Every structure is written in C-alpha cells, then in structure tokens.
Image 1 (cartoon, rainbow, N blue to C red):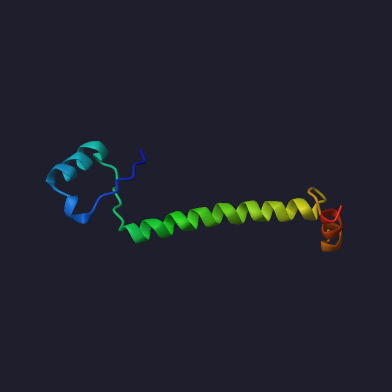
Image 2: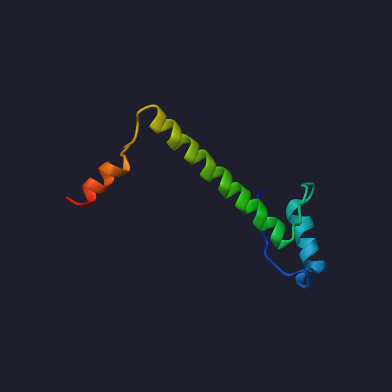
Length: 79
C-alpha cells in the first residue's frame, strides 16, 4: 500500500500514530521532511526525463525521427 500524508510536525498526535499503526500493522513506515520528499520526487522526475531523452537520441541515431540542419530550418521559416 502506498499513501502520502502531508502535515506539519505539530499535527502529529496520538490519534494519527494509532491510525498509522492500525492501517499499516507490520509494514515499515517511512517519515520524511518535506525537503527530502521533494528531492526524491525531483530525482524520479529527472530519471524519467533522462530515460526519454536517451530514447530520443537512440531513435535519431537509428534513423527514426526528423533531423534538420539550422539552414534547413531557417529556409522553412522563410517559406
């Protein structure tokens, strides 16, 4: 099960802890400060972007895609 709770440290109380224990029972629970969570999200996003970029480069190297020189692009602009 995956869930993300966004709350301030002062909002963590006994009821919240009991809810976590009841919901997740024997599962491990990881609690991160917002800045660490943001860094993880950014790293995931960057990894996905990098993978897409590498795929695009491979497509071009293998002849898939559209390749134009700057001269060709400028000529198209002036048409």
